[in-house]
Length: 424
Image (cartoon, rainbow, N blue to C red; front, side, top):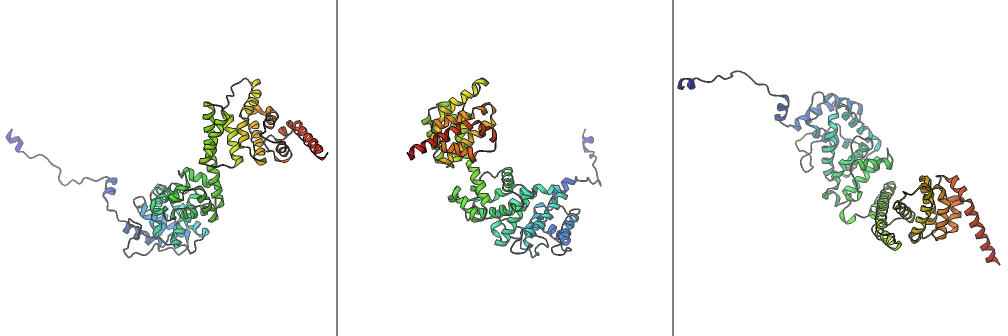
């Protein structure tokens, strides 16, 4: 036993075990400055403003340089012209600024020129699709949080470029979340940058397109880009109008109206389920209006829709019209409380018209519903006549005008007889 244990065990000598590629790359030294210098050698051969040349060289360089490993470095160079240290300052190692960078665009920034820079990014990311994710999830958010480090012209160029990237679908609006950081919102930096982003975006796309982009990027409320002491809808409205972006102000207002209308409709349904007392319903609506005011026409629409949504329409088809008339008569005191002028009355008639057009079960009952609203003082004869003559909606217009012809004729004759009595 002792002799066997004394024999040395066999071992591999002179054999070199090859490491896997992934392990070698993981252990390789990270040298962004070396990468930068190598990239410069490619870009320096292109003449100024030769955007096709820069695109070709970047694609060519991608064949030898490790774009994926140095994605953040690559986009720092192409966006702001050099390597950025933690904190946002440039790496001071004596290297010149990049031959290609959006900061090289002329002053003041020109949207048409910046589109040419954006086209270079588009071609680069289309060729190397793996760059898309680090571009929008790491590079842009990081640079945005340091945006206060640069001059006003540089900030404008970066903001406008991001607006163009967003409008062309090259990145998502999620990168804008970086602008909600406290150190950026406190001095109005965030909201001013956002205004520039929106202005550039709207040169190519509509406000509805912008709204959809913000929604996909999970940008829920623009007030989060304002300082905490300025987070008010009126302040936001005034700001965007001052920046000559009225479409943004109007869109935000409509969005807030939609949220308020949904809240009222939901509240009405819950209140009616508990109690159909008119005073309770009116009180619930007024409490909601204290949170968010609505124009009268928007308010009366949400009230009508909320009340109708609370009705159980599971009756037999031949009983639906009678049910509709009873429910309208029951809820008439609620409608009267918020129909405070001719415009609102005409708006209510149009709301009922569209409702009856959309729900064919009560389409034939429209003249009777209109008569109930008139008898309950929800709408006046002048409002009905105005609606009939020139205020109706296009949905089913000819059908509804013909159906109400008798009622309108009666109201006109009644009005004429009252005028004759006054003259006598």
